[in-house]
Length: 87
Image 1 (cartoon, rainbow, N blue to C red):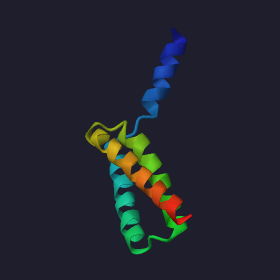
Image 2: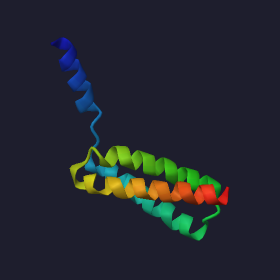
Image 3: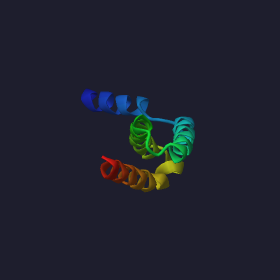
């Protein structure tokens, strides 16, 4: 029983809040804006892909952002496909 209490206590401590989701969303908007201006910037593509990965994890934990998870995965796939074409 102690094990279950510890397991769920750690899970509750790792929960994210809406402010974190908002911050990641703003970061993504800025990176997408830069990416639109510099589509050949590989470092920017990598950074954007990392942010998308973070967003998928965080958005899945925030009720108001759960609807955005599929959009994030679609954007990740589009970015990967673009990178493959350019490679």
